[in-house]
Length: 405
Picture 1 (cartoon, one colour):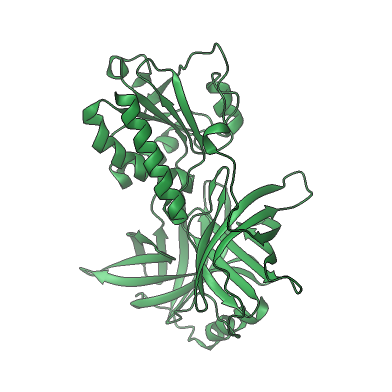
Picture 2 (cartoon, helix red, strand yellow; picture 1 turned 60 degrees about the vertical axis):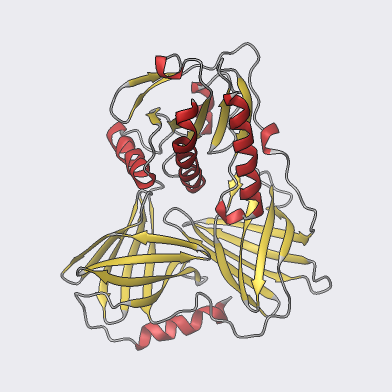
């Protein structure tokens, strides 16, 4: 992996150290340093443009485009916040160079950040691709360990360019972008919450097997093995979360305006209701919120209601309200978001005793007009999953139409 990093490091050293008060327009290549000693970095690219004198950044992850509008320049210092998530960049500006830190407030850590103007390649390749990684790969992370988990890698390759994601039973890894370099693959993603890097190499004897490393955040590391299998499947997401017999569906929390909301309120009587267990810190929840907001606009006039239960990573209720309101405003969400004042799957299950467990954020509960549980969907297959996303959309809308009858 080191050979891919050296070109970017040399370019940084060659730049002038003169401080600037202006961001150069065009493409930049940013890197978040996960481990300086091992030179492990998450690369991503972004574009800078000006509208009415105000800079805007657009971050690229495969097909995803994240527009960053909260950008502030003070003398030679640059501050910008990614939309939705509770994090920010603090940098110093030089000619063609940004240097500083990315601070993830929700997880309370920071990573060194560097960006170089004019570098358009996410990864610098040195060899022609010797293998097409397109297809489905049955994947095991941390095999043989207590935290071992399974997933399915879904990749698409065009010459050396590679994109895709991993499907898991608790959600997908969103948009990954990278390259095939010789017998190896390199994929990364940065969306404001995730900083992911995947590095893998083909088995010497079998080109249908890859071995790799997955790095995330400031100290996350897992090994993985993936076997090419066009028929690889995960368990049905509708079967993973169960209800507790005899426990009615009930809860009562304040919304973002401080009003107490309960399922027994007149607004919800004799109506099917979708309950979204989520958090504003959760990228899969962000994807689901975008989708549910569209569904609500379409089906609420026909009688559907949606309630989101937010389990935030803070004990500060006002901060939790602000984070959730920021998410609501981003997607123009018209349904209620309730601030539970709790965080984590264990606390979520305790506050919802009608569930045997909460395995994932998001978890989505579909209630009929009598407010009985019809189905529970664990995780979310977002737009990065392609056909899986379309299948999930079709199943969801068919279910809603049945509940509205």
